[in-house]
Length: 123
Image 1 (spheres, rainbow, N blue to C red):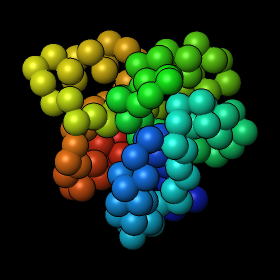
Image 2 (image 1 turned 135 degrees about the vertical axis):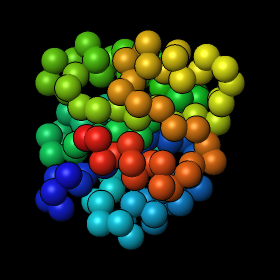
Image 3 (image 1 turned 45 degrees about the vertical axis):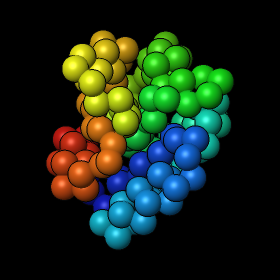
């Protein structure tokens, strides 16, 4: 990604996760947006066409990551945006479940920064 294209949206209901990820990504030159709920994140995607990728927490109240991915994938104007599923659910089959739900990639918590940067480099 070019510097001007490194806009990432973090959707996570835990402010500590948002804080830590934002600090890491900003230090690597990313412009970071955040949303504390899937609904808020979807609104941000619809309003800000320059966001290039989403880090989506899969376990959230109200609308979880699976429902949010399904909604985004069915909304034509934002369906193309890469979504990286982020979850503490690192059980056998979770990665496949996230990818089947429409995520482009998957990373487990606690997040390995180098692994995250490699994933983001693909988009």
